[in-house]
Image 1 (cartoon, one colour):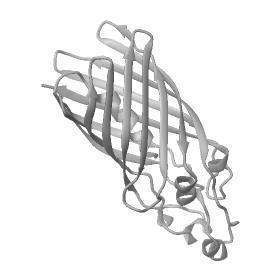
Image 2 (cartoon, rainbow, N blue to C red; image 1 turned 90 degrees about the horizontal axis):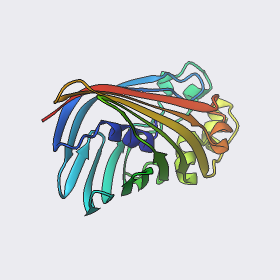
Image 3 (cartoon, helix red, strand yellow; image 1 turned 90 degrees about the vertical axis):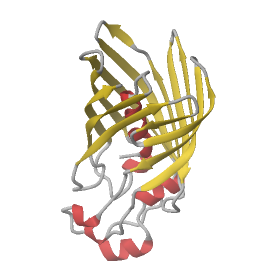
Image 4 (tube, rainbow, N blue to C red; image 1 turned 180 degrees about the vertical axis):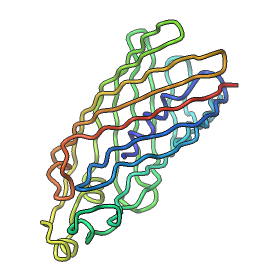
Length: 241
């Protein structure tokens, strides 16, 4: 799962009130050859104040905040990883681990009658991938009483360092595994997103959010990858104080 996916789906659980607590489950389809799909239990801990916010996997400090525009410094956890012990393919078991990381940068959101524009630019802070991710999304919210539906369309850009760390195959790995050596360049991955929310009562809320992404060519062409797309689903329930 990419960092940008986790933070954008996390934003689906944010409510206008200052504090929201709850529980959620995140499903992430593995893009790796013979890789196992992942289920992550994630606590919903959302706080939105005048100066800073917390959105489960993401925290930030507002540089600019009004009803229309929010610009912030942000830090987020990226659970994307690869563990050779979790794959069935013998060649893939000879590869090195790709570890999760912490990413930081800027996040911006603009809300208007014609929709919402959301963008995030973050880079690796733990010297793992030394990569950069840029996510850009357009969304429009439909209200149906207690229910709301928010479809979106966007694209995710991964820098060459980001792709090469998670999908590249070094010379040493190639010699051990028999996989072709592969050095990845940067890529764009377009996606569709959909979030459904139900205000069960004054305080209780249920949310389901999903994203279908077409993987960029630099990712699909990796000998580590045998899929052309990736599906993610996040569902949870929360209590707003």
